[in-house]
Length: 264
Image 1: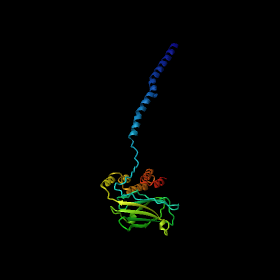
Image 2: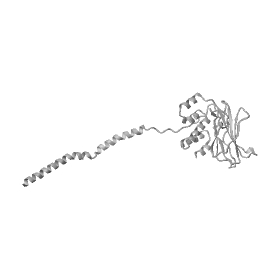
Image 3: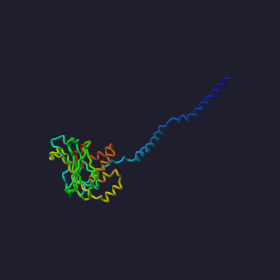
Image 4: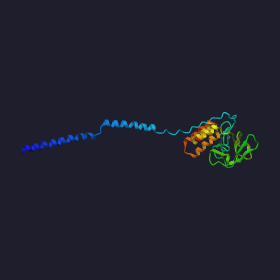
């Protein structure tokens, strides 16, 4: 009897050991293999690198470089008007290059700048002269600016068109004392309307509209370039790159003081 019990125990022990032997490979397979993990990580790395390589590059910011026209007229004094010792008088500038600026538009925009709102007793006048005529094309009072900084005059508002090949002088006058016009503060600019070249027309048609300001600048068309740039800024007031480009192009034509103020 003892012998049969002993044999039974031995049989159960053998069966249990055999069962463990069968289960062992499964247990080992369930444990992670460090070598396999490393291999899988290594195989995933190139895919991530490829994703970064295939990603589209960020859009290039607008780069604007004004190139003065070869046929530019002789340099003329422009822009800056001093206020003397009276700090109540705004400082004004005509936003033009140091030569006769060009346009291909019949009714371009003209830009000027002032650093403070003038006193309500001061009047502001705008005048446009064809250099071949003694009579002004426009002689009008400007509305008092609502803010300091860059101001815009649209010739379309006055119903006047520039003639191709004609040179014009324009000015903005701050009348400090109507009884003493010698105290007037005047800034002056010159503009010349030219015909649009085939090259310019092709570039404007084939390239992105966002490049218009840069295209005009590269072709030496100051007034249309600056107008296009300001149109973009008005449409995208939060675009810091556009404002930076305006600062840079003002510096390119020597309007450093205006550029410094516009940068603030």
